Image 1 (tube, rainbow, N blue to C red):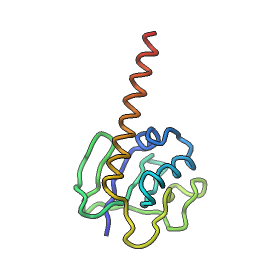
Image 2 (tube, rainbow, N blue to C red):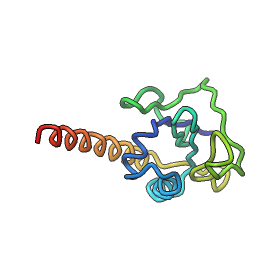
Image 3 (tube, rainbow, N blue to C red):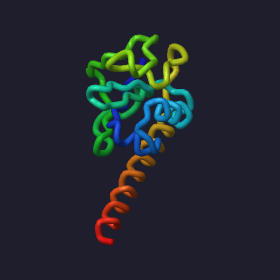
Image 4 (tube, helix red, strand yellow):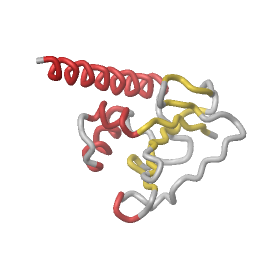
Length: 129
């Protein structure tokens, strides 16, 4: 069993330093140590699969852990290319029970939020100069 942490794409892309799907996918594979992640491209949300014991609720703006009773449609295992479907596995699941480590997920989110804030500050400073 698992639950999912839903993360806005802008947070993940800020952490990855790019919006290029192949590069974001490679970043996620490394940052989450091969743990499974998929994206719903129409909602621009990434879903990071974590243990069911993970606390549900809104963690920070743009990040929510879905609780029990949530419905989550996941892509078919063979959907691993962004061009072929609405949602796809950025990092496919290696096997049953393979999930992301919660500490790695927190680091990814914290880094993405930090990068967003740093980018906003730079934009503000550029606007003043």
